[in-house]
Image (cartoon, rainbow, N blue to C red):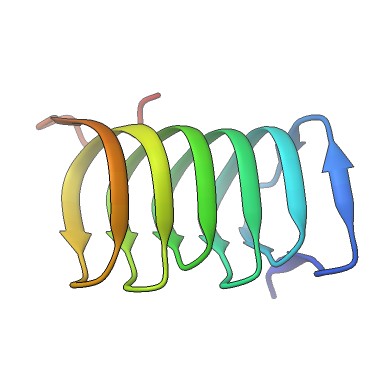
Length: 107
């Protein structure tokens, strides 16, 4: 079961989990988890480091993951380090991307 930051919640500080994290609220800080999903109403101002990252909402900062997916509803202003990257038509992206052959997330 994923840990969820609900739409009504704002967190200032770092989050760490050995499992999955779903963000529907606002987080200002660094997020570490196995899988991190920023929901359509979610907003992250900081860094995300995980094996898998899916952005449906907004992020400003850094993303480091083996697998990164930017959905059509995403607004991404970030530098992304990835092994696998998918970007849906309609996604908004400003930043840089750096592919890596490493099997470890980086960021």
